[in-house]
Amino acid sequence: MKELNKDRLCEALNRLPTYQPDQRVWPGIVRGLQAKKQSLDLPEYSPPTQVWNNINQQLDQTGGQQAKVRTLNTWLSRAAAVLLLFSVGYWTANYESGPTVAVQESVETATIRPNFVTYQEDEKSFAETLRELEELNEPTMNQLRYELQELTYAKQDVESMLVSYGQDAQVMRKLADIERQRSAVYRQILAGR
Image (cartoon, rainbow, N blue to C red; front, side, top):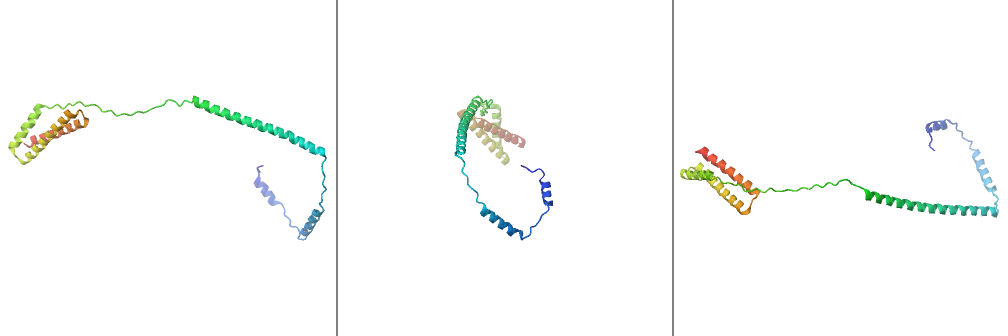
C-alpha cells in the first residue's frame, strides 16, 4: 500500500519521545528469555484420524478440480491459437495492398534521315575561292586556304560515312560542325580580301 502522507508520518515519528533504558535492565531481560526458552517444552498432540481423513478428502477434491482447470486452460489456449491462425490466414487472404505502380523508363533514339543536301552553287563558290587563293599566294590567306581544304576533305569523308554506314545522329552532328567551321573560314577569307 502506498503511503499518501509520508512526509507527515515521518515528521510525527520524529516528534515521538525516545527513552534509553538503564543498563542494568538488559541482563535481567536476557536471563528471563533463557529461562523461558528452557521451560518452553510444549506438549505434542496427535490429531484424531478423522481430521487426517477430512484433509485427504479435501486435497483429493481440489486436486481433481485443479486437473479440470489445467485441462480447461490447455483447451482454451489451443482454441485461441487456432483462432489466431485462422484470423491471420483470413486477413492475409483478403488483404489488398492497393494498386501497384510500375515505373518503366526507356530511351529511344530517333532515326535521322540524312538531309545533307550539298548545294552545288556553294560548292562552286568554295572551289573558286580556293583557286583564287592559290593564285594569290599570300601567307595569311594560304593558311585560311589550307584550313578550308582540310574542312572540305573532312566533309567529304563524313558524307561518305553517312552513305556507307547509315543514319547516325553523331555523324550528322559532326557534319553540321564541319559545315559551320567551313562557313566561318569562308567569311574570314571574304573579310580579308
